[in-house]
Image (cartoon, rainbow, N blue to C red):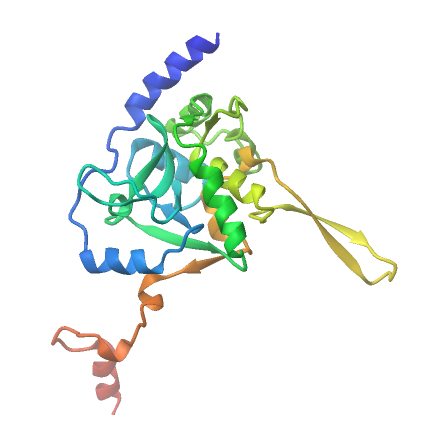
Length: 261
């Protein structure tokens, strides 16, 4: 039974990973800004272009279909000589290291864990690096298969749990769950469930956080988490709107102002 599911999962992966990110022209300046803004422990969300990306974005009602962890310098390089600085889980090859330029031409977002100290970042990074080679949990593919058929038969309240029906095998992972486990190891919250306990004062309530099971996490959770800040490389590099070079053409706002006068 398990072998049959494994073979089915691999067949589906071969189909839905068509259109994997290929080498595209990358804006060198934009890539440099992205590189300078990243810190080890940051989560890089990716829009994605594979067939499965559309299913994940529909299922999660989000722009983001993939998540990678920026681990910093690893001393390893790609065949093109680029430093491998991202740890991610790919469906067909498992947990691997990738160069930043892989997603330089795609829509991305940096999510930074606020107030996470150097020790905490090291725990997160080490957790993921120790799991390089971990295979993708192909049993999750069976759940994503349903969403390749454009029939939204399941109510929205069920969608998050429907993506969590993987094998539970600790030697396997999917992109967002592995990163969620890494932050769990550092005792850093992503989107925990909150219990409100009444203190001695009737008007005083204490928040007690419960760790959400890692299989319930998806890429968008790092974006909407109140504990992660969105970092924009253009602003981080010292944005000055006065230094922008605009095309020499009439500005609609200025035309309206002149007409009003």
